[in-house]
Image 1 (cartoon, protein in one colour):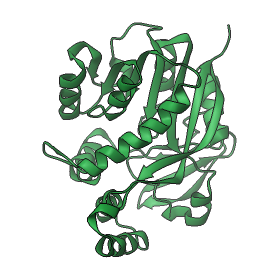
Image 2 (cartoon, protein in one colour; image 1 turned 60 degrees about the vertical axis):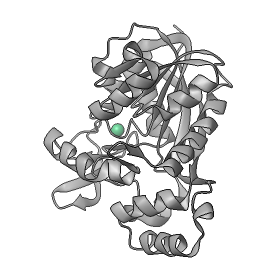
Image 3 (spheres, helix red, strand yellow; image 1 turned 30 degrees about the vertical axis):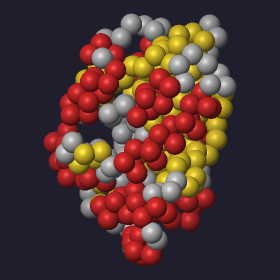
Image 4 (cartoon, helix red, strand yellow; image 1 turned 90 degrees about the horizontal axis):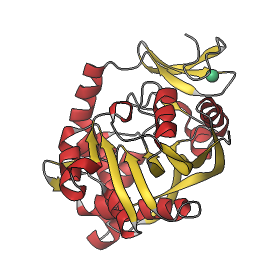
Length: 289
Ligand SMILES: [Zn+2]
């Protein structure tokens, strides 16, 4: 299997994520990837079982502590973005029900989104208008070239089958002086070194695992470059972690979080704290012609 980002044949097996499915590491660009990827049917099954439950979105009920926690995280991202672009059209790729776009609208941006889930996209369409939200993938969307000042991809690039295709399409939709913000797991982090194969971001639905080096390589292939890189901080609360770690069970974290959940009063369980959890945020710009 050649590297799915740079094409190098120098790829080694890191470990088996499950029998017959491995995490591979490219010795040239440094990207790690799952091989073989889950097929569409397997993915659909996995998402319908785990995903919305884990994110505190069940039926039509959106968990309030999850919502305000996510908005707090998005406000951090927005203040970073506003160092580069202060207004204009923002496209959130994988916008879900539109929390990031709500936060962006409050800061004066015009909201647009792409969402793969029909259920979530319907909720987002009700909030922002039929023409502002595309139901499907970024590659399929019909927005005009060079339409956007900002394109945001939080927890997105690790899920796509061919990152180069997704990022190239984003570059095509971006104005010449616009920025792309990517948040994704980062393999060059303390948590990855400490936890190894037990790192919480190693999941069957995560096909790619980047670091600064491999992200920079991918950006270059799409005629983009990194102008800012940082270890990402996320707002978290115990209520949310309790839901997450009882769906994605972890030998140490699940009992630990359950203990905290049992000990703390409800108000403290919903209080946000900011924590770096093995992810990066990068800002990309187009290369000058
Ligand atoms: Zn590679």
